[in-house]
Image 1 (cartoon, rainbow, N blue to C red):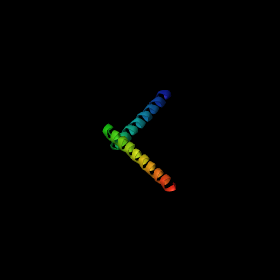
Image 2: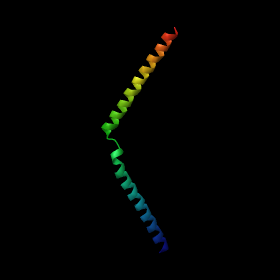
Image 3: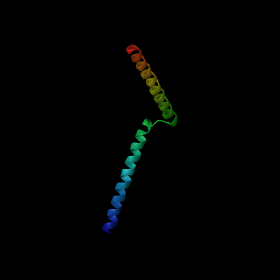
Image 4: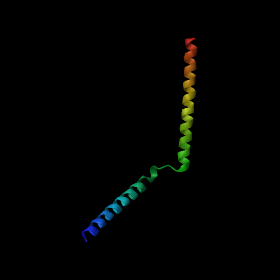
Length: 68
């Protein structure tokens, strides 16, 4: 009988943790971007790094031209 009560307490603890995780996930859902938002963010980030590389290249060629 004691073993059954212990197992039941463990099960209640597990269900409580699962419920807490469910509630936390639902509360955080507004922070998770949609697929479209994620794609737009990645494209924007890619564009940013492409522009940064181009700017870095311009600065490097300017320095080389100034040294020559």
